[in-house]
Length: 470
Image (cartoon, rainbow, N blue to C red):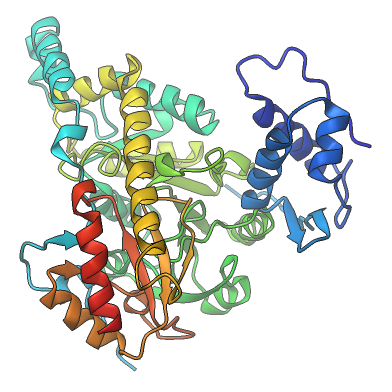
């Protein structure tokens, strides 16, 4: 029977400590592939902890791909195949983005767009920090062009945040701050080269494909299976740059298991110009368990470029995003692109640096999580009590700010969308996010609830029932 000590676990919760112990034993091969773990009750009794502690640890390990379950049989260790890693020498697709398919108008309820309720943003704190920055900083510093990488204070604050929240050990010099992810995508194209093929997920974020195409690079749309992009199809494409969202894929909600992550790291290690762009766009809003560890944190070959944004966590109007570059690319960045001025004002950067370092960001995220959890639970409860209850199947409701809803209806997807328009609802289906159309998933709605008003949910569900069922 496995035994772990729960003494001196510092700030970790009991389930986090147990999760770390089991994960360490799996990575060190003390627990081998296919080995069965103790049942939750037996394990809990042996360790002297609650069954919920064991259940939470097991659930996190399953989410990350270290364990798998068999119905009524228990939990088993996954096969973690790590390819040999050798250090490198140092007919026309439908390009209509979902947001452009619908005329710009006000909707009674929007299940597609992202937004933040006005009362959720801490305006008073932000204004106070802005005043403090303006009064306390040297005027010359505030009015000077910033470095292409961003001001040192903000890069240090982001580095500390990544360590505390994502377990990433990052030198502030590796961080590049920019005005939104779309700008940073173009920076990466200039840094890595336009002659490289860029692979993206299919289905996926359609605007990303447009950005790459407008920057004159070849885009390969790679189909996916239940674990993410299919490695064989990636290899066949000839692409050298892979852009993925491993911790929460949009729109399917897939969390890439650790075995698939190691496959892609192995793929990247086999070519000098191969890199992985890890897009961690809404990592703060996993509503169950711990945040999924980043691909960058297990990359020992310096092949992963991490990208994230504050637009999701603060508000879409905050066009502040950042890259984490491998160390050897930092030198290339400043040698080839260091002539650029910073694209985010020094005043905004200094204010955000204080917002992060003084603990306001963490409090804001915790408040947002509670708000989104309330919205999600209210929406799911209304759906369970509605005429749709036995007509829908919900999945991926814990991974981020949307879930998937498979609907059983006689109406076609286009009929549902038109009916929803008439009801003042904005909806989208997973099938709308495919570029090539391989293995489209029919009648699966992408239910983004971040912009919903809680008091409108009952009526929104009633209108949704009419749109789907007729």
